[in-house]
Picture 1: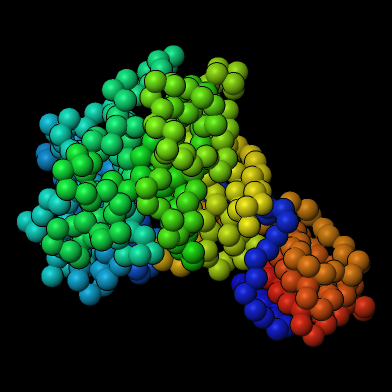
Picture 2 (picture 1 turned 60 degrees about the horizontal axis):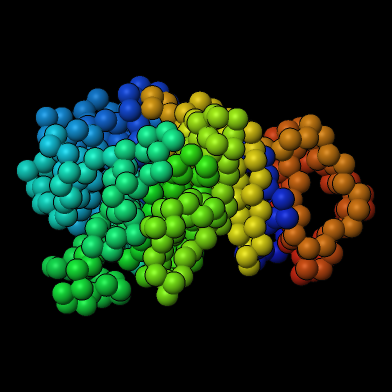
Length: 436
C-alpha cells in the first residue's frame, strides 16, 4: 500500500548522494538469460538461449515467443519497433550455427500476441565468421533508429594484448563498432550516419569505433543519452557515455587505450581523431588482486516506484556481483558502490513503466531501493535538493524552505510533527512503500 502527500510539484532531479539499492528475487525457470525487453505493454520478453520467452501476469508462458533452436547457436538480443503495437515488427540479433551474426526482422503472429510468425523472417544485416568478442546488444534509440554493438572479434585470452587483428580501429571492419540502422528505410542507412562517402571503404552502418566487447548498452528513457558497458582486457572495465544528438563519428579508444591507460600505441588512430574518454572506469584483473572483472552495462532508472533513484544509471560486474549507481549532472559525476548484491549478473532490463530488472542465467530480480537507516529524525530547516529514506520511521519537524525539493520515503511510517512546514515554491513528497 502506498500513500502520497504532495504539496506543489514540478519536475526535479534528486540528489547529492545516491540512494540505497536492493535486488529482490522475482522469477526463476530459465537456463541462459542474456536479454530482457518489453513490447510497450505489461509483458516482459526474456532471451534464454535459443528462445525468447514471455512473462505475463508474473508467470512464464509455456510456449516460447520465438524458438530458433536448430537455426541459432544463441540469441543475443531482441528489440521491438517503437510502433510495435501497430506494425508488429520486432528485431532479433542471433548467431547462426555457422558463426554468422544476423539481425532479422520478424512479425508477430496475427492470431496470437504471444507468438512470432517465424516464417516472416527477413535478414537485414549479417557478419560472417562472428567469433570472439561479439558485443551482442540491440536497442532502439530515442530517434527511432535501431542500434547495435559489435565486439572486436578477438578471443580475449587472459594476459594477451587483445584486438589481435586491430579491428576496433580499422574503419573498414564492422568489428569493434557501434552501428545504426533506419529500419523504416529501404536501404537501412540513416541520413545522419557519418561515413557515407562513396568508395571510402567504410561500411555505411558505422557511427562510432574503438569498442572492445560492449556486451550491454542502453538509452536513457527520458533524455535519449547513450550508456555503454565495455568489457576490458586485463586492466580496466569502463562505462562510456554520449549525450543524445552527439553519437556520430566518435571513437572510444580501444585498443590504443584500455580505459584511460595507453595500451597499444601501434593501434592508435591518427592524431586528427579525438577520443571519447570513459565516464568511469574500475579495476580489472591486473589491479584487482588477480580477480576476474567483467562489466555488465545497465539502465538509467526512469520508473515511478522509487523516485529517489531517478536519473541514476545502475550497472554491475558479472564476476564479482558488485553494483554501482552512477549519475552525471552537468559533468559532475557521482559513482557510488552499493555492495555485492547477487552472483553473476548477466543482463539488466527495463519494463514499459521504466522499472528495472537484473538477471543471472536462471533467475530475474527486481531492482528496488529502501533506506539504510531504521529511524530518522529531521529537525533542521531544508533547502535545495534532499532525500531521506528509512526502513522504519521518519520523524520530521523540519521546515522546507522556498526552493527546497525534499523527498521522504519510509517502509513503515512518516510522522510530521509540530514545526513541520512547507513554504510556497517548495516541493515535498512523502512515500510509504514496502520496497517489494
